[in-house]
Length: 363
Image (cartoon, rainbow, N blue to C red; front, top):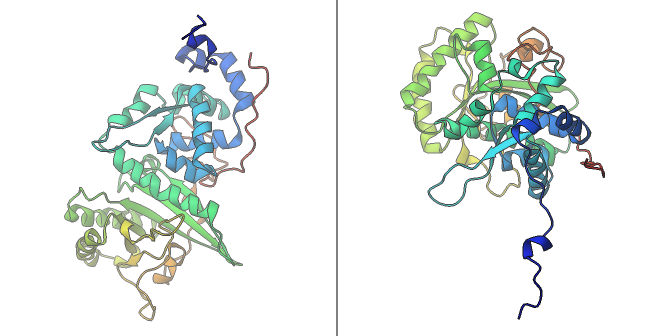
């Protein structure tokens, strides 16, 4: 028999609510964020601005030691309106939470670069529109490709060398630079330091299996025009869902590649997602899964290359130029001044984690 009239909701601790849109844009809220956002938080905000959407697992791979710590910090960022989130519908099971840049986060990024929020080209309704975009799965897949490389860097170190991504451009940034000729799904650069630093750069073509193989092959003509225009031979890596799809794609790619005026200016390699080692704690495209379309290494024991060794497949390929990761103003990414609608590309390597200090006085 219940002998007390105290209502249960009075006994429960108060849960902090999410800030309203008006409160999130206030001076007081920005002052609060200044005392709570860490360097890793701000790096994550820049990453979301650059790459549009990241799942919980991708954010964990990129910056957090565990799923629990990632979820806890993302909850704080969500309550502060630094990020927004949505969960796409799935016929079976539950989709992971997807995160985009929130209004307060956009204000922080703009202030860091001396801009107004509108100069970022940011609108919250437009950012949330990715939830209904037909290319959502493609965008998430491209971002998964790169965050798995970051995770490999953070959790595994080779005995005699260190490997790390040093550049990761979004499709939008690639479109601003090369869109009149070709629009890659992403641009990346991978560095291996084994006494002497070596780098390999690439354009990514991420295939979900929905395009015709003929269309996949025709993309090489755009890369050939880009190589002719810039005088730079940049490898094109085609990531496919299965080896069966890869076999068909290689036939289509080889047909177009052979008809190019200068095939050597467009090095091509393919790989399939089902080649990744399922027993590896952090499977990634850095593994020996890449098969060049043409290779000068006939003496090689195995046909598949690691990402770090891909340059060996094309010995005549010059090393990446220092200007390959410059921003629109011609300065290197980290030091480039921001211009309207263009922030410097964020470093793919997260800053060192620092404790999330929360002031005792929340007022």
